Image (tube, rainbow, N blue to C red; front, side, top):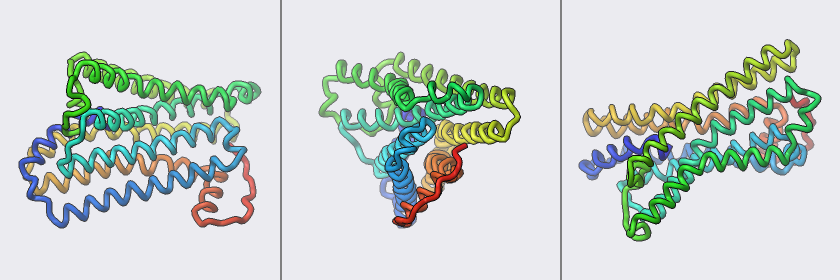
Length: 314
C-alpha cells in the first residue's frame, strides 16, 4: 500500500493539515473501529498460523507452507499499513530513517501477497498435471527457497531506494517527514522503476493464475482436478482482493475535492473497503475453506485439547 498510495496520501496530508482542528468524536470512534478491526484479524490470522505451525504435517506440505507464509505476510502488512494510515490521520511526522523502514515492510508485504498466490497456483498445477512428480518437485526445501525468492523480489526495489536515500541525503537520520513513499523519492528514475516493478508483477501474476487454471482444466476432468480448479479460481479472487488497493489512490484523490467533513468520513470508508477489508478476508476465506485448517483453527480458537480427526487434503 505504501508505494502505490504515495500520491494520494501526500495529497491527503496537505489537505488534512488545513483542517487539523476538525477531528471530532465521530472521527475518533471511526478510527478506533478501523484499528480494532485490523487488530482483530491480525489476531485471527496469527492464531491460524501458529495452529498450522504446531502441526508437523502442515510444516512438511508445500501447500500449507505457502498458506502459512501468506497468513504471516498479510498480518504484517495489516499492522504496518494501519500504522501508516494512523500516522496520516493523526498528522504525525516520523524520522526519515524510521519512515523508510516502515515503507520497506509495508510495500514489500503488499507485493508479496500476489507473488505468493502465483506460487500457490503453480503448486496446484504441478499437483494435478504432474501428480507422480509432485512430491519430488514441491518439497519443503524447494518451497522455502521459493518463499525466499518471493521476499527478495518483493523487497529489492525498496532496498535500492533506501540505500540510495541513505547515500545521498545528509539528513537521512535526523529529518522528520510525513511518511509516504513519494516523499522518499529523490529522483524521477526511482518512481519510474517503482511503476515498472508494479506493472511487471501484476502482469506476471495474472498470467500465472489464469495459465495454471487453464492448464488444470485441460489436464483432467477428475473430481480432484475440479477441486484444484476451484482452488485456483479462489486464488484469482484473492488476487483481485489484493489488487483492489490500487484503486485506493484514485478514489482518495477524487474524494479530496469535496467538503472537508464528508471527505474525512468517506476516506475512512475508502480505506476500510479497498485496503483493510480485502487483507482481512482473503486469508480467512482460503483457510476456513480447507477442512483440516478449519478444524485446527477452531480448536485453537476455543483453546480446545480434544483430538482432531484428519480429513483428506485436496
